[in-house]
Length: 98
Image (cartoon, rainbow, N blue to C red; front, side):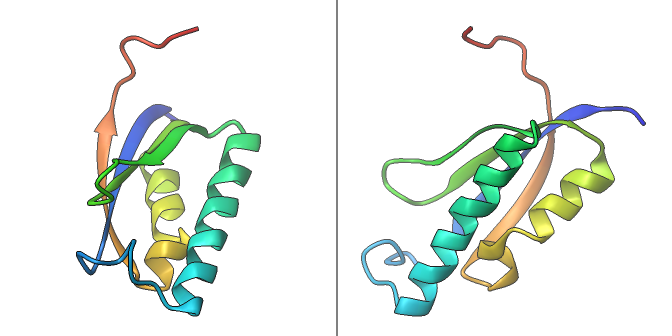
């Protein structure tokens, strides 16, 4: 298995999503957070977070191949429950703070 890094970008489906969420959407965001936390514990997540204007977020994965990265993105609760879209990119971490 060739391991690489991948980045997936997630974008809310609505521009007012962060200011205007239903209870179900809040629960989905909480599941999304726990999903990413689990990936961090498994050693697959390097970092994740939203930009400050909440127009998108990024998830950087390491030590996964394309198939696993695709699986991880497609099973992210925010994507499964269709509150966000996702797009996967091959990525290379060139510099990283210790």
